[in-house]
Image 1 (cartoon, rainbow, N blue to C red):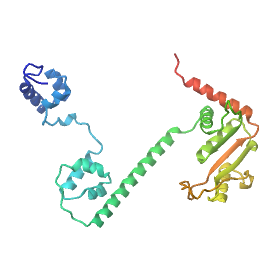
Image 2 (image 1 turned 180 degrees about the horizontal axis):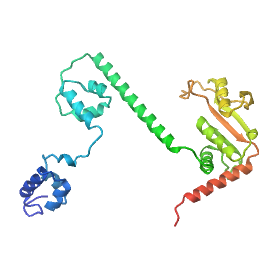
Image 3 (image 1 turned 90 degrees about the horizontal axis):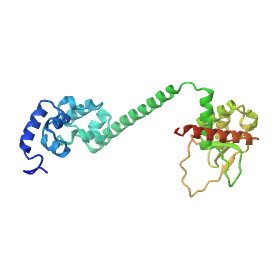
Length: 285
């Protein structure tokens, strides 16, 4: 690429000038402009071995952790010890200190595992706190919602999770089944907004027979604000011993199904509203 008759024949002269500019604090962009070099590979060769000026480096939130990790490594700490001390990932520690000499072992494998587990616990605790903070911030940003906003959310919610009519099977019914109590709460608020009397609702629990059926019935009845005896007969899913279920434990409460009696007209309004949302979302020409 840089032969005697090529564009960069005076490569050494260009390199001397590039090194001078680099040491004066010039950025790669400025060096390229000054020397008229547009080839990234050639530009890299011209400044090879010359570190960029500090002002050109992007500040990073983990710079302080990186410096501390290097100090700990130089003092003889292992990756696991540094991870436990700083609560960061082991891969980050490796990236920050891999150019430094490996220290002699100072503790037993059991002690190393204990420190590693402590570091992982600290890291996971920090990650969980970050998740909670992000969710709380997002929740506060929503604030109150208008009737129109609730209406639009409810239409989208139903069209994603509710029973829908098919050309090959006419089913103009309003039926919504979900295991998320938040979804059920929003769906009920939406029905209230539409003026659907709670007396028209047919509600029943759907759950594996091996779960806590009575506990699930009480749970969903509380969500609905009714007595559990007012629920329709629970639908039990037979347990297959050959199947390994993951939806087990105290938090598993099955699903709640809500059907609106005499809901064919309501269903048509829902489908029409959804079509209106789709049309409104399309870009105008």
